Image 1 (tube, rainbow, N blue to C red):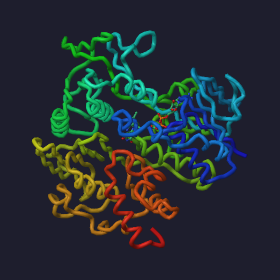
Image 2 (image 1 turned 135 degrees about the horizontal axis):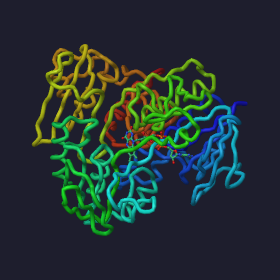
Image 3 (image 1 turned 45 degrees about the horizontal axis):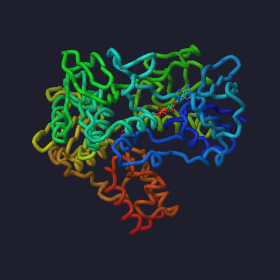
Length: 490
Ligand SMILES: Cc1cc2nc3c(=O)[nH]c(=O)nc-3n(C[C@H](O)[C@H](O)[C@H](O)COP(=O)(O)OP(=O)(O)OC[C@H]3O[C@@H](n4cnc5c(N)ncnc54)[C@H](O)[C@@H]3O)c2cc1C
């Protein structure tokens, strides 16, 4: 029997185990996860900080999952070393470990593998400001935003009226800032670039977003770097400005967690380099998720991680030994109450670019901004802020590669539904309905067939709608259609 050992019980590792077991009841699966918790949906941590979800409701697996699926799960353990010659990994207990597995032999043991999968994710990057780190750890009052434990620490300190600084105005920084402002904290976002979310937004959209968030009570220090942290007092910025803070939340970007791979002599660039078979430079070792670097992938997002898990499960179980991962087109949605923002594909093309058609609409006073990039008559990229209908429509055109209607303005304003998508019946089974949890129409249909016939039951069984909630109308539409037509196939 093949022994698959998965390093990392995060979103990629947990999904891979599910995908492997779904295809093969006998393959031996060991998971080693350094966090002390059962796997959880990291994407939903912003909603935990905002107080709209409990930590328990983010769980991907319950505590019986490993035993029920015959999986050797070692929680609170980390892989310290890979011996490629003997095909073993050495695992060590992490501090405060709680072990759910029956088969844990001791504090430091070796585990044999036939196939090893690195799913070690990424780690927060901490800007090099004086005082943020002390003795190799974040200083008192400074918290990263990556894990459930980080959320608990943030929650404990984020009382009403507390001045809080969020370092980083990217997607996660904005989500943290909005959640903390919703709790009544006095939030300032310090961002080194001239506009927010520069990876996903152009300066125009970044400006409208800052204005909208400003109306919700959040302040911004753009083009600013943190220079010095004064515990209990706040931050000094590079221009000498003092920003008061009882709490500093670090959300300044992530780096792929590659230390284990580097130590094992695998090829590493920004991430662990993998080919279309998700193999590293050692063909018995694979990498998926945030830690992996595949040429066609934007890293740091969950959808590529879950697509990679499905391809790798096909290969490792032999269900489809020829399966290849060829990249993922991703749609980014901001999960922040009262702000509806979606960005997809190539958003940085200028209006005067000769080989693209670029349309732009702005209405800053009402928090609206829409930019559409068309190439070869298809949506190549878009930013849609404050216009959820347009976001939903444009996403459908993008996902499905449908030619854009000749009435471009109708598309930009969300009034041009693709004809074949007028009914949920016409959506392909693979169409992703809930992007936060990557739930497809097919999964919703099969959950409904298994008895989840109401919205709460569907949310419980598939987790659709439990993220930003932006897919609620679409899921209700599917429920209505299923209830009315009871389709034999979908
Ligand atoms: C607050 C927040 C909001 C986000 N929102 C979105 C979003 O809206 N959309 C989106 O697409 N993405 C979002 N992301 C990113 C998304 O969560 C990641 O892309 C996803 O978690 C990647 O999965 P992963 O398994 O590769 O890494 P992770 O989920 O980070 O899991 C890696 C796991 O490996 C463990 N590990 C590391 N080294 C070892 C070792 N040596 N031994 C054992 N275990 C080890 C780590 O402790 C961790 O548990 C968000 C992330 C955060 C933090």
